[in-house]
Amino acid sequence: VPDTKNLLLRLDPQLAAELQAVAKVEDRPVSEIVREAIRDLVAARRKDKRFQKRLQETAREYDRLLGQLRADER
Amino acid sequence: MTVTVDDADLLLIASAALDHDADLLLDTIDVAALAHVVARAETAATPVDAAAVVLVEIAQRRPFHSGNQAAAWLAAAYVLASNDIHLRIGDAEALALVHAAGQHRIGEPEVAAVLSRHIDRWPHLLRRVGRFLFEASSAEWRPWPNGLPEPVRRRPLPRPALAERRDPPTCPVVFGPWTDGRQSFLVIVGASGVAFFPATDDSGCAVYDVVQVRDLAAGDLVGDWRRLRTGGEMVGSVAAADVRLDRDGLSLDWHVGSLVPA
Figure 1 (cartoon, helix red, strand yellow):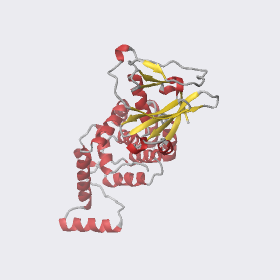
Figure 2 (cartoon, helix red, strand yellow):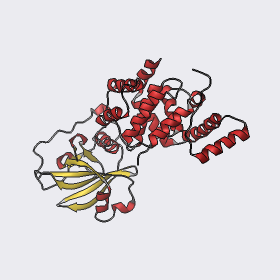
Figure 3 (cartoon, helix red, strand yellow):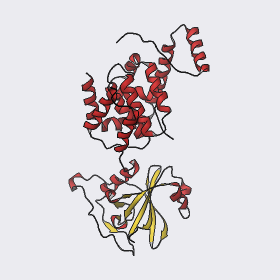
């Protein structure tokens, strides 16, 4: 797996322009800013008890199957 | 409206599927591939289509460093669960489905077709009520009174062994208007409910029409319950003989397996 990847994101023009502006001002790659946005979203979602409960229940229900799928990919 | 997933959902789902820390996973994901999965799922017409999209897209685009097949399955199951849809599918068939999708042998329509075939025909809420009914069976029961003929074929109510019984959970029952000597009632589960309306089937046997009601409001329980009935989802009917209330009239015993889907 390469250390870096070329990214292609489909964004509406205004959002893309804002993203590029932020990236230019902060002198950072666009992908890093996107990753940071996802990190903030993840932090918020971690506090969502309903989401966590549903995810845990679903993961528990398919625990054996998920183990098999993980093993198949190794 | 179909409930789907965003980037953060998928990352946390993958984290659960792979048992990896989400922050570490984030450092290695293909952001563009993940964004593509989310965008495609948003355009799906139905929850099953959305589940098929996330399964196929994750299995084929491989946005995560590893474990994409496990993430694909859990993401699809999560999308379905978020839309109150549950599957009954064996591990072998699910495994074959994910493998076939990952190897580009099948696409979204085929995956959607398989998922559709395995949808649990008992809605989630009904299954919860059914569990409650079985677990509450240590109470003393009396048959529901009715003057109508009972069904010809009555099935026995299965009971868990005494040692397996847990403390009966409480699930409020609210009684409503009378119809032909029998009373409507509603079992409240969280903010939703399952309403039982007296009716007769084609052969004249006493049954209850079972209506699933979401987002209950206090005002729904006032009056003749017409709004409750028309606003809910008719899921089927159950023989009146299979519906019994405990001595206090607060708990309901209903053999969920006897429900005839609408």
